[in-house]
Length: 231
Image 1 (cartoon, rainbow, N blue to C red):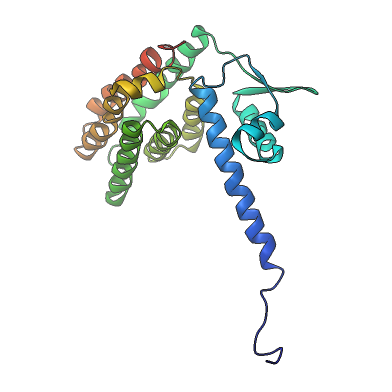
Image 2 (image 1 turned 180 degrees about the horizontal axis):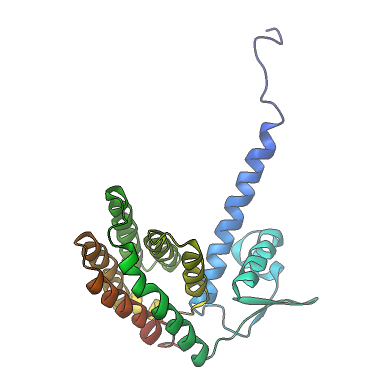
């Protein structure tokens, strides 16, 4: 066989593959750590190190350290020089403040969203609602939180206000939900998740006022039930 008959893959392709693998690993680690912090599995005030967390997750310290830096930018952890990372504490007042801001900006936005959602987008929203409810029923909190976040970001995107979407997503990421697992075990998390479907159907009918009321109720659940029931 001559050199022209068979050529090995060009070395230039391998860095792209390795970069994709590294990104997937980092995103996986980020999702697991974010879920552990938001649900209280890693207690607030705890001091943790990248090597220790990496050992628990079965990965090296590098993707853990990178993920923790992302979480620091989200406000979930803070760096402690020469020691690692401390899980930031959040008072009841701070949780109330986050919920209040969300109530001020998200429910009224339903009036901006109505009439601006393309027909195909309703299918995407309902799919995310299904994924969210299925995850709640399986008690898969990582998938639940991810699909819930994607659902609300997509919904708010039809307001045409990118700054609003970014702010609302940031507030959602910072909210603690220490009672999430208990609610999943009791079946109440799936019940709350089904409000996503109701919200989509109201928007399909063009009922902005009812959608606003339902979303306000949905956010209130997050504060009154999830955030502090297992505090």
